[in-house]
Image (cartoon, rainbow, N blue to C red; front, side, top):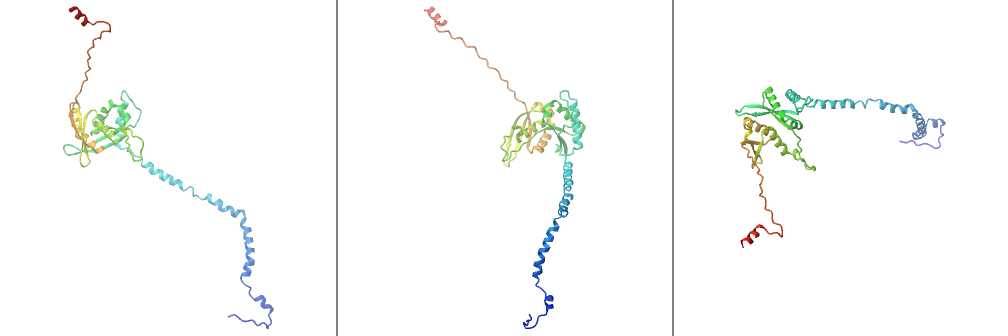
Length: 289
C-alpha cells in the first residue's frame, strides 16, 4: 500500500538525501561514461594481434601428412606379387631367349601371367595344366622358339603347358561411338586363343551349332597331318578352352583337300586377210573354173 503524504507537514531536509532516486536515471547517466572508456582501451595493438598470430602457430596443417602416407601404404601393398611358379617360368623363357640365334633379349621379365587350370583326364582324375601368357609382339617374333619353351616348361615342371598371346579386348558400350578394330573384338580374340592352343596345328574348317537354350557348340576340323602330336591333347585343349572362354569345342581330323589351278591355254587365232586382197579360197575357186 502506498502512503499518503500530508502537504501541510514540514519536509525534513535530510529526507531528500536519504530518499532513493529512480534506478533508470543513474544507469542512463553512467552508461555512456563506461562505453567511452571501454571503446578507447581495447584498441591497443597487443590485444588485437594476439589472436591473429595464434592461429597459424596451431599444428592444423600438419595433420593431413600422415593421412597421405596412410593412403599410399595400402596402394603399394596392393601391387600384385609374382608367385614362385611365375618366377621360375619367367626364368626359363628369359634363358631360352638369350640363347636364341635370331632375336636375343636383355630383359629379365617377359612372362605376363601364368594360370593353373584344373582339368579332368580320361581316367576321371583331376590334373593341372599351365597356361603361359606372353606378349603378342614376343610371340610374333619368336615363333620358332615357342616349341622349345613348351618342352622346357613341361620337362622341369612335369605339367602340360600351353602358350597364349596376351591380347586386348574392347567391350562396346552404349555410348561408345568409336569403331572397334577387328582384332580387338570378342570373336576375334577367342578365335586367336584357339589357334594358340592347337599350335602348330592348322584349322581347315569350322561348323557351329546353336541350341534352343542359347548355348552354342563349335566343331573344329584339323589337318590330318597334325594328328600325330595333337591327338593325345584334344580333350585337354577342349577343357582349357572352355575354362578360358566358356565355349564348348570338339575336334575332328580330316585330310586337307588342295586344289590346283591349271592355267588356260588359248589357241592362236588365224590372221584375217587384209582388204583388197583375194584370199586363198577365192583363188582356188577361180582356178577350178
